[in-house]
Length: 555
Image (cartoon, rainbow, N blue to C red; front, side, top):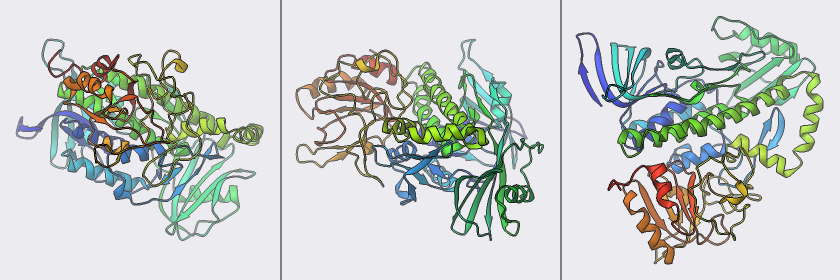
């Protein structure tokens, strides 16, 4: 990053990427950009990380992501509940992997953790800065394209020129408004009132449906979070302001019959069932992630997790583009992959809202869902959707021939290694969760497009056993030869050598009984998803070129 004074009143900055918004998505993106070698400036209106832990759930895939960057040790061992819900109907979230269930981590803690890591890696964070305008230069005249943004901060205006800008500034995104990005969907028709309150004593309620509405209550560390919806009550127009505590206590009393007005509110808000998604996540040199890209009721704790996973998908790709090692077209895969996931998550949230906030008319559907969840295939499908473990990206048709002895049911983490939990149950089947793939999935390698299972590699040559998740912590690509140093390893190493500046080669047989296929090789992207698989290097150079750019020698 460079700094200059363009006039007596304005500070000018140059950087690779400007991130607007320092919530979980923006901070995760800044971390990944720096890990990938890009210069990044983050601007945010707030003076510091949020003091209101509106989101408190990290799902299994997000926990795996944090682990793959070595961030979990700082969290200690947060409380974990294997049980979640789908529209208020209890749902066992246990799936194979190191972190089954949902983990209770306050958003304040998540933001502090990510901010510290981003700063340690050299990200430049500017607090109390409001975005005023932006101008995009597409470079059509032969010059380098850029985005110029003007912000106002504590010491006056700042003009920031970046090669790319990413809006991570929440559901009321200023970037989205300035770009005039189409944001189709529906406005809120119903809402939940929510408050954190001290000094009250009410029984815990887990999605308790009463005659007049829905009531939720949970107490932790002397603070009770209450949420309430009154059946048939329309969304209240408040002119952009939050509800006052009296509104919450009045609705709570009408629904439950309890008086909590003697409590002290720590914060109060309301969230509706608005459901919108950008038509495109990429608008040339402006991209979007997190709630700026999609607006949804945070049912099942999916909103924060969806945003963090957006950023994790985008960060390494954008860093590779600004570093010059990958073509700009790589950014289109971010839009394709994450828009598809976002659309599926928003659809499941719409279904959950009907089950959760609908009146007596939805009881037959709730009863039917309860019966269906006793079928393990149905339960695993919904658990994969909520947890993010069922995601399968379309990574193209570059995979080599799969070893037919490696069945379609083997790609889960049945032999999960490390972490706060343990693997459980059968592996996710190839069709489980939001299957994002092209062609005939039955004819393709079952790991292709899915996350790399957390597993152990057996020691070789007097070395120590290694864990796959820890191999991802550099943020580089990974070519994993599960033949150890057998006959195929040399050919794989030779094929990948031109990309050795961005892809690490590791050889080692998987430990017996684990989820990895012995004798196979896997090309893993920095975000942990398998981009190529096969026993021989057929198709490997094409996959390396697609995901990591042209080789260093320009061949």
